[in-house]
Amino acid sequence: MSGSESRNIPTVNPDELEVAPGTERENLQGWIPEMATEEETRVALEKAFNYRGDVTIKLKDGSMVEGFIFDRRPGATLADSVVRVIPKDRTEKLSIPYASIAGLSFTGRDTAAGKSWEAWLKQYWQKKNAGEKQIRLEPERLE
Image (tube, rainbow, N blue to C red; front, side, top):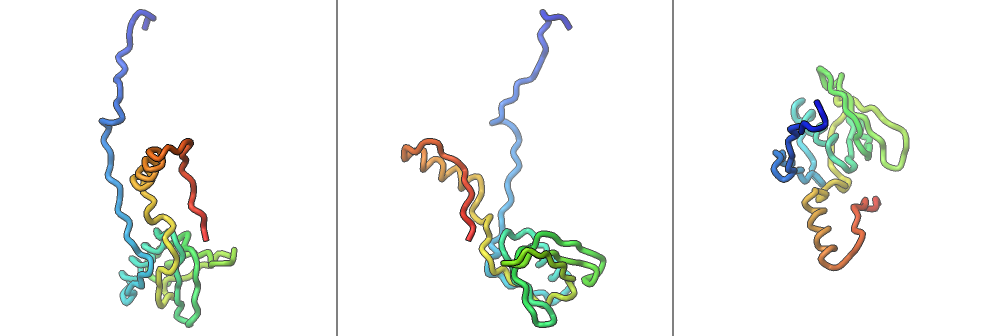
């Protein structure tokens, strides 16, 4: 192609691009799910994995583990399935078989609640309209 030929490069208007809708987050803080069936147990632990706060797990031996679920490894049976937890106030990582879990409660604050782009944008415009300069997205302090 010579320098005199123009290339047909399409222009893209970002305002006209297809935008996928976001997903609504369930408010799970304080929820104590029923875990009477295998399916209920699997669903509750999947929601716990997606939760951005601490949960309290009651084990069948009567002990409790409070912490953050950072991984889960579903298997063919509950005995083959494992949830991985970082206990609150400790650094060790625990692997707990689903079959050992008697109960679950969403006890910690969901640190992702209310953190949508729309919520940040609303806050941004409130600050901008109030005359603030150099407005930034800053993380919330953790407890």
